[in-house]
Image (cartoon, rainbow, N blue to C red; front, top):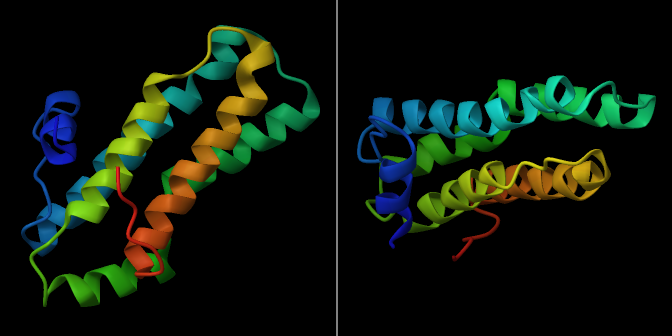
Length: 134
């Protein structure tokens, strides 16, 4: 399944990337999807030790706010192009990671690494540093 098609199947009313408002909303929806997966972990898996609790908090901050530096580059470049396949692929990867949220506390470190990687890929794609392919 193509990344954009996948995103639309997972996130209701996913607007895609064709217009400024759509790109902004798509960014919010992907971060929200990932954030919901991260936010529910402590409640589902019980109290976390201090290190895992800190990592959880750091990830919640990252999903809660757009990386302004990366998004500014993305926003400026987006007006002159029509190919958003790399962004869709990075967003699809983030959603796939969210869907793998663990059910056991021992799986949290690896999951947190994956969430960080997904956010790093999104930032790199937005900033033009990398064109992430599926």
